Length: 121
Image (cartoon, rainbow, N blue to C red; front, top):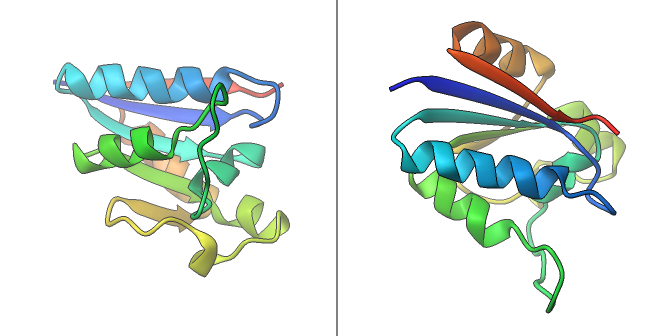
């Protein structure tokens, strides 16, 4: 199978780009592909621990954890997270989750068969 790197540059509020990116990652994993998922900008808030689900409101925490359980590598831009006021201890605890600089994303892109940049609004 192939390696897919997804770069999500979306906002969490008023955007379905993050939902789409997570759904795409889930579909790729279900087909047996390797997936690296990069979050930048406001999308890094997806990695904040302690999120709460609400009825009729997008809640992706359980879905990303399930995807990581199936092998997806997930990385939040460290600078983006720090700029938004949350630190390493504020992020989800999962062995497949890391916070790094954009060098991680660029290295993942270099070794990927396909790269998709999603968001950027």
